Image (cartoon, rainbow, N blue to C red; front, side, top):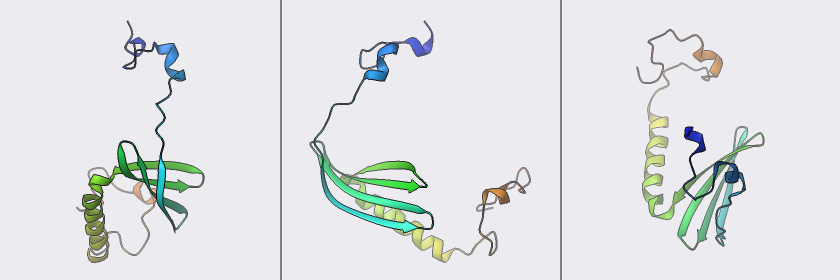
Length: 118
């Protein structure tokens, strides 16, 4: 048996997996906030379903969407880390100069160099 032909965890065969749908949970939107940063839009949505409350953060960058989910039980720790990173961003001097670091800049980094936190 080839590894990708194993029966799925849900008891469906390989060919049936495309038709499997997650069970539907009724969700309620409790609060939504939106912020535009440069060319990205971030949508913060506090939701609740039978399993509990959670924060869904969606990044929309030119039509491409990525989402992360943070259970409400972890929001205090998440907020603490984001605040610490924000504070460090203001306090730590730039290491690359005044130019904005882009993907093109990384092509000029020699092997073995660590451009961040050297």
